[in-house]
Image (cartoon, rainbow, N blue to C red; front, side, top):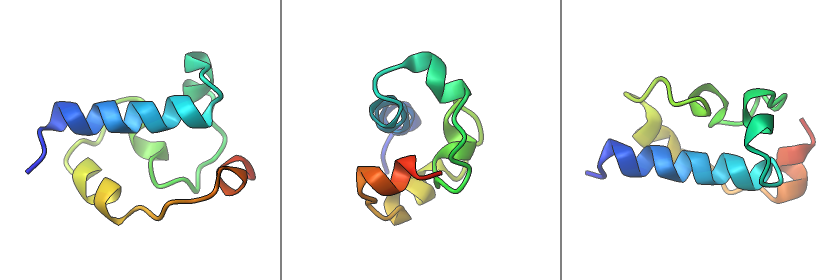
Length: 66
């Protein structure tokens, strides 16, 4: 099992990448269909591991489509 701290770092890293390295944009993220959206602010950690394991890898254009 992966420590929760590592999961949050992975989620944060993906959100930073998707937001063009603008941390303020993570809070303003409009892409609610993203599987990480509910976790972007560091909440709902019980299911974070499951989400990361089952999340499809989307091309960057799909993530930005909203």
